[in-house]
Length: 251
Image 1 (spheres, rainbow, N blue to C red):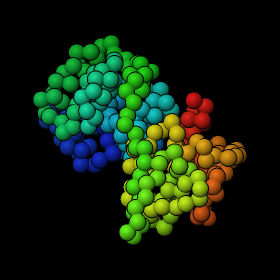
Image 2: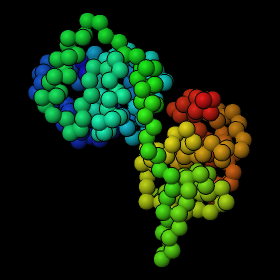
Image 3: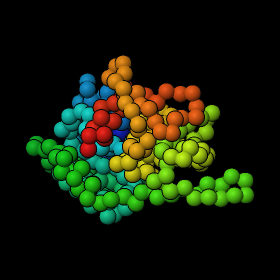
Image 4: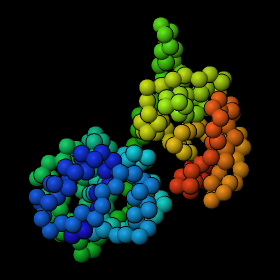
């Protein structure tokens, strides 16, 4: 059995690999991937018998993988979501494993895969539909403290989040800049993806902040933002995010 592990936490991926070898010494681990980008590239040239898939990866939701490449391989989900969210995943999937993964649950899931192996396909459209049926509790505002002063900033006031001089900041539509104690990776999970998109390593922008767009080299898109960025950096959608960005715009 050839297995692919998609998990952005190295210790979790290593632990899962060890447990799989205990469950079945004949299992071959093809790769351990930690991001959507890595996974998309891998699927373009490779194929596994079974995928162990975490929900949140280092560069976004793992479901975006299936928006970019066609994958019919059976999946066992590994997730820290609560019980209500987990129920939504039970659509043509083999199983889910709630973290921390127990050996007995892993063994049971592998046996289920063997039983269904002869005729199995995943309806990811139905799966995504179920996921979207439960709306996550996205962040609505941030508390900002500068010295002794504290103020709140509503998410609706924010034009974009950005990295500058190794720090993360938000910029409001009024042109105010405030530092945040969050990474952009973390913010991607906290902010409603219908309203904000991570265009590259340094910027996550609001739909309403995009004033103009220009076709750029290698299929990329160059954005003009309002208000203009304070840092001397170009707001260009990266190559690996351009397709998802265009789909986001065209929802």
